[in-house]
Amino acid sequence: MTSLLVVLSLGVTLAIVLVLVGYLIAIIVTLWSAGTTLNKLAGGLVAIRDNTKPLPEDIPTINGALTELLTRLLDVNGNLAAIVGVAQGKR
Image (cartoon, rainbow, N blue to C red; front, side):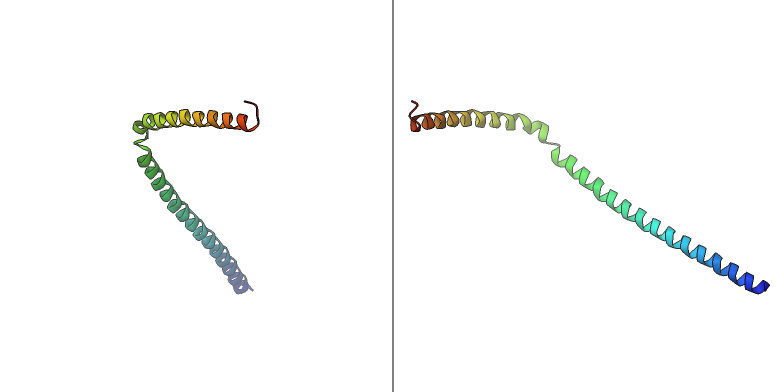
């Protein structure tokens, strides 16, 4: 009887240890995957920082070009409004 209890105790202990090992391995794999993902994210953020570094110098040029484009588009809009007015017989 005692040997049966010892064998059952060892079996239950072994099962518990195997389950714990399985969970720990799953946790290790998950943490490793998270670390890899964070490394990729950090690399992407560094690339974004490096690619956007010259923007403060280029903003005035871009702003000037967009202002010129707006002026010309407003002129075109005025011309189109005049054409629509003529086509509708309002002018």
